Length: 63
Image (tube, rainbow, N blue to C red; front, side, top):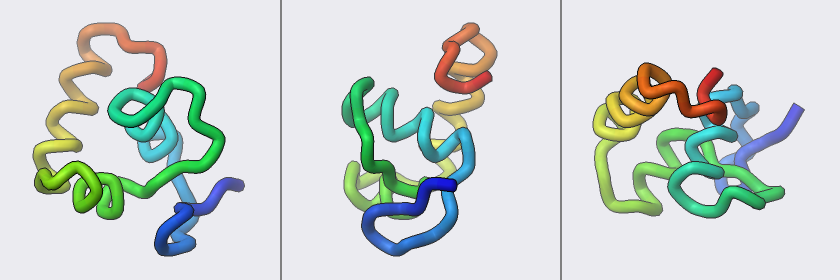
């Protein structure tokens, strides 16, 4: 199982998908949602809303 490169938290599929969607599709190191939100300067709820939006649109990063 992968871990967040900042805090060491165990990652979920959404964490990995979000890092690939918002940072780099070819990423090999990932951030958890809280660390990614901080990195991007947005709230966690904003990211979670975007993940749900992209999931509904059929984005394969959020299956």
